[in-house]
Image (tube, rainbow, N blue to C red; front, side):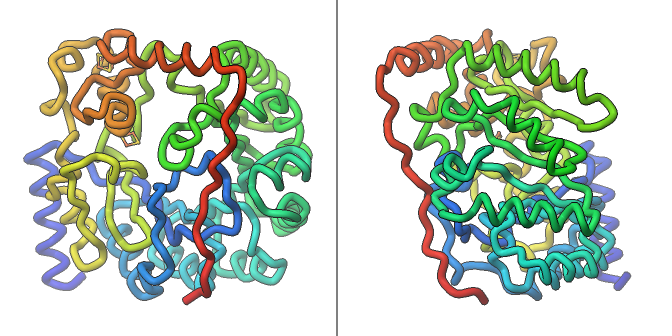
Amino acid sequence: MSPLDEAHSASYVGWRIRRGVNPPMAMLAELTHRCPLACPYCSNPTELLGRETELSTEQWVEIFQQAAEIGVLQVHLSGGEPAARRDLVTLVKAARDAGLYTNLITSGIGLTDRRLEELDDAGLDHVQLSLQGVTAAIADRIGGYKGGFDRKMHVADRIRAIGFPLTLNAVMHRENLPDLDATIDMAVRLGARRTEIACVQFQGWALTNRSALQPTRDQVNEAKRIVKAAQERLKGKLVVDFVPPDYYSDYPKACMNGWGSTGLNVTPDGSVMPCHAAATIPNLTFEKAPDRSLGDIWYNSPAFNAYRGTDWMPDQCKSCERRDIDHGGCRCQAMAILNDPDAVDPVCRKSCGRAMLDLLLEAEAEKKERPLYVFRKLKIGSDR
Ligand code: SF4
Ligand code: FES
């Protein structure tokens, strides 16, 4: 470690002791917003970043090294579609060389047989494959990409042949919740060790499509029953994780396990954020890596300290017995529904914003016709 690095490390330790801030454990590296698919439930921002804004290979390599130095253990390589980066194999190798556990979050499109072998040689540890639907007709329509389902099935076969540990990610919503049983069966068939059944989270494009995607209360109750039965039936064979839809809960989720507590996101242009939707909160400014070091941003930047700990909380949360369970919920959700990132999360039964959320759910339940999807759009462009 250089004298400068040592001085930096010492200052992080000092900051940690003063503020009680732990180092981050996980980093979401959004390598690109480009993606061949156009899923309407995408949580990427509606203002997508083009290829010309993306960090270079060298900049990502430096970010991985900085991440490892400040204590990050695992990096989730995501997008958009990370395979749209021609340097993906180099990036995986660099992250592994830095000592990080590497998880690739992908639709599978763009992963040729040869590329998968190269990723294996580069040391890739784990793959999370997204599923848009259980048949080609549904998956290709929701993903807006003809032939995508067949391609994904081929990639899943190759993943199994190589032996990558596989998680199947399925975002569930009003249209595909009737296929939940078949989705879980597919995870078993594809040889996944784990499946994440995540009810759509309303951020980015998904928020634009909220009326079309919002499940009904009956669907949610049925989903909980199916997941519980599957968890018992498949014990020891497949781990079935369930992310319930927030809007029907009594209390909010512990979003990011608390702002600036365990993880950070780096966007394609290097902006470092406490969560993937933080840019929707006005008055927060996000600093860019690698020019400003990740450690400095994590410990010292105003954006990371804005909602850290409990000082920022409204009185209702400060004095609440659930304060250390949900950490005051999700700031981006308070922003999206109440237009106030400082408010009590409107999902919370104790929030005065809950009435507004209930009205919204009632109004959506009464609609006879669902609006058409607004598909995510970004010109693919050529790669760097
Ligand atoms: Fe969570 Fe705040 Fe609601 Fe308590 S009042 S349950 S801390 S959001
Ligand atoms: Fe930003 Fe929850 S997504 S705090």
